[in-house]
Length: 299
Length: 142
Image 1: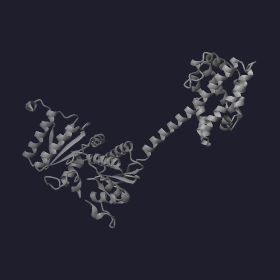
Image 2: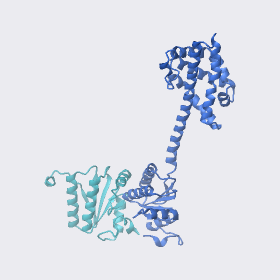
Image 3: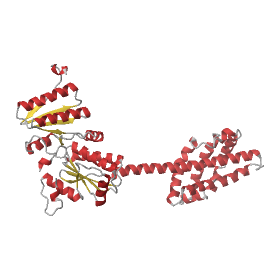
């Protein structure tokens, strides 16, 4: 990629390209505004597209003026990075793959190169070739910048959604006076079980709860790691003076636990949340309507 | 431990509430102080009609394996003298750390705060040892 270091002519050629871009910004912008990339993003008015194109051309001119057209971290790109990212995001929403967007960015170089060739009396001459090469490198860098911006935005989105999932997926519900419950949904990994444990214990303090129910109906599979997380949570709740009941153990999960040889030992388990609530109410001394299941199973 | 004989060793106050001893721990517990506390509690149980011991650790930020062992020893020796021990007021962060370390303090009853601990003791039948350590907390309530 380090063209400017290998070729001593690239620096002056790039600066010449910079001057060309600056002087012909209006013309290039007019041509780019009709290209697929800008036309499909700025559908409202063509003037807006031309303005956006001009901003990109000016950024390119600034980068070219530094003599290093292959530098994707050049400060010249900072100004248009957000705009390029927005454009790429718009294209992605309409169903374009990143490769298609990259192709559309590549298509921008043809009109610019044609204009640049027209600048020279002898388009086949050495100087003209150097300049065209520099412009091509510059356009390649623009393509990289667009791709990089798109990818980093996707990364940010994933990170934000991951955080939201952590917060949303673990609500602590007060079921009764002194009874709180956490319905666990989805795979239970270390990070999530930590969040569950913290929010459950905080709720035990806030609600002055004597009983905490962990409902694992929404947990697809229970392996030894998940069981370990559950037992840690149960132990921590017990240390706080609350009894933990694990509910929502489906037949398949019960069999898995037995087959894996996991010893849930002292953990009180019930098959459904209703059973767990009935158990907790009975232990609290509250009246439970007759016919509620699992009355005889209380340890 | 020679420091135990010295008069200026700070002592943890042991309060008598009816037939219950109330001990409030604050901050870090030094070795000498812990030894003195164990002696104090055992002699108070021996001297008077004591049926329960409540250890309040609301003001304790860190419970390490040493303090965990001290608490377990207090509970064991109290049980030998027919008094039950309840640990009260553990903070969530402390509970999480202990659970992560695997120090689950089996055999110790636990309660959310001192009020709950006293209620637990007054509701329980005055037997010496719980039927099932680790499983039987709150079991006496029903």
